[in-house]
Image (cartoon, rainbow, N blue to C red; front, top):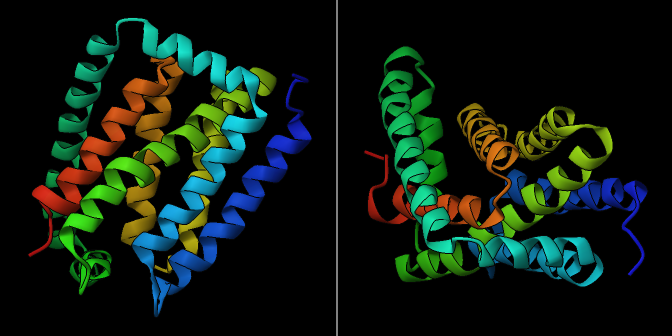
Length: 215
């Protein structure tokens, strides 16, 4: 299959931002809440990448064949470390910034009236994997190949963080920046999409389902 061009890479990355900006701006609409919308966006982008990028498919196949148990274990350890960072950051930000508590609670309010089981299933099966498959496995990998690994890391992290600005929630934007940089850094140095996916799913489940940081 013909190599995916950088024009297509940039175009799809900008389309992705266009898909998520209204989601973060509105938090969902009646009948199509945040979790369904997030999942549909992620699924669409993942299917596009899997279908059009033969290099992505080859890279992922090689990744899951090479010591998958070790990568999954490292992903879980990375998720525990990141949760610890957020646990401390949550306490510190609530103490330092007067607006932090309301902004953090606003993120958790997205779960109001939604089955926790549905949230967990969508995070584990669609949302977590899709974000890593697209932003790290496709965008960061392609940009790193073209611009160099550090510039690819910076560009992918900036795009990932930028789409959260429409939420007008500084704590969510900060969280996206930290997470994007963390998983981008893992991908830069380990080159394992499996590791990043496990880390992302485990962290999301911890923060939103099992050990939420809300009061």
